[in-house]
Image 1 (spheres, rainbow, N blue to C red):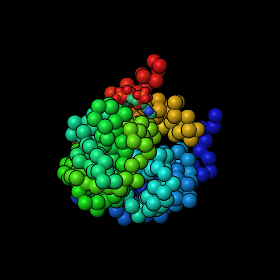
Image 2: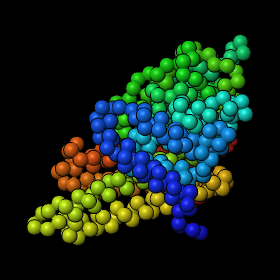
Image 3: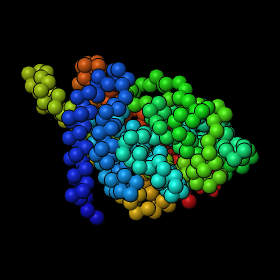
Image 4: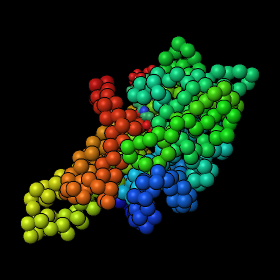
Length: 381
Ligand code: CAA
């Protein structure tokens, strides 16, 4: 067991931290206020290899491991949580199912432009009536004249409005439960495929979250991803990995909030001394630091397990990391805001944004309640 970062991990940490400090952080408040997607930053991240961190170089990927991926999402989220989730959903939810379940032709067709950041990807399983119960999918895909015809609506889709490629789950058989679900690749511009409602969210305001609408949308037969009926298992496999990205995002948001709270506590004077000299504040800082270290270790541990490829084991650890890191980010960002007092409650400081951004990490890619279900199911089997 070695708790030190390798040279490669330190290199990606330094590179992403510098990018976050120089490019993301200075613009984060303004972009959030304007609900502006960081398109240029995403393009730059593509050039840096961050839009395809773990995928082989033959597909334009950076060929790094999952710890590198977690570090990249953490550091970027420290600069801007919206960029963090854009990168995470793209890497984990769109590229991963294509890489692990796609044919060689599908990989060659889609991965290079996704890994370079020329194309952004999204993943559509959630629907108005199918959230935690992912197998409740109502979107249908019917085979007609050598094509698949999709009808239905996906909701809350991260990257929905900016994606060129969508990986989408639909029902291909009526009475087969989760075995009647299949996964498809749908390209932007396909007739019958459109972006629906743009969600008006509480946080991560410069990320794109929309509906995806399919109305008699015809796609080629070869756009089936994996086997017919394998869609639910592809979704579960994909989400296991995705949860490490969200854990990393939560760690990054927490780190940003704690760093700013410490800096503020040192300069803010009340009762003739810096508030950092009061034990009440010192204890909050100690609690924040402890939560963050624990969340980071759990996240890197889950990423390390993903490197080993043993899915029977890593599913539980990814859920543990996401559960702990997301709930820790709730505690940390609220303590950080508390240290800022009234100023923290205004938009003059980023504390209120950190609280809003952290909140979603307890919801997307599986709520905390679903994480507890996944963990306990693994403990009891
Ligand atoms: N990997 C592979 N297969 C798995 C699996 C996993 N991790 N977990 C379950 N399965 C398999 C089971 O083995 C079972 O297969 P068999 O029938 O062949 O035995 C099958 O899937 C069904 O399993 P369950 O009976 O456990 O399934 P369930 O219907 O009870 O649901 C659940 C399980 C964990 C609740 C699942 O539905 C779930 O994860 N829900 C949460 C959905 C979610 O995370 N949504 C997030 C949307 S994406 C998003 O949020 C993106 C974003 O914005 C960033």
